[in-house]
Image (cartoon, rainbow, N blue to C red):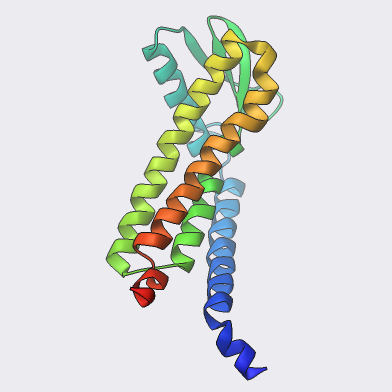
Length: 183
């Protein structure tokens, strides 16, 4: 048993570290959501920010975009040229994806400074790509509504999760302690 533990020590350490970091960050995010009362930023600050930034980008592309609080659920309604297209919900703000990304990077950590800056820059990149993803999805739904379900459920999740996967691969191959041990 001890030999088996020693053989898989790095795998066990990765799994436990990942689960611990993921659990703590997820708990913190759940706590944040519970105490976001929606009085100043509806439904919560990050979702509200993503909705506002989506509106600004769409307006920058020449569309008349508006956001308004959804009256029946915690989300923001997105309208383009007066047409209601989509809801921007908590799951659209990329925080859950960033938590997954950060948990993996910390579980495969490298040098402290390198890990910190990779987590920071990767999180910003994920946030920006997610924002662009929402803008492109909105434009896709606006111009080709018949593809809305395919775009929302296949294409755009593939973009965000594909990018996270590529960031993980780049990290493991360039900066993680695993790479340093084999170099």
